[in-house]
Image (cartoon, rainbow, N blue to C red; front, top):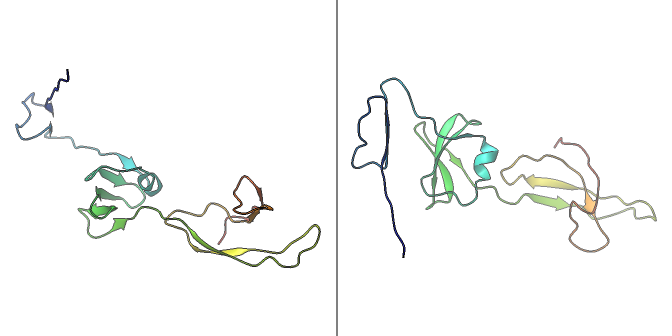
Length: 144
């Protein structure tokens, strides 16, 4: 047997009851409401945000609401602006040249960071296909 409970929450300085149309009613004559304050990186990492979820972006100093219809965070109250979900980075790789027993020459370029900061540059390789960061790699700094 399933049961369901519903309630309203009133938070006030005057002990008043919550408005009948509100699930949460916050009343104060001298205090505000703080919504979650997150960096752009943290906001972008929220998995499957609820439609109309509201956050404050400390990186941009602006409020955003997630709109499921556009699959993006829409800035509100301060004008236009979007935080799009990060995408996969785009890189190009150079053909391996100067192959000897112990050395090879290669490299590549980051065409798009996918909406997230690049934290390191380098080359990873293996004798098979699809090398990962668990395979051999170089770390060539953090500069573009």
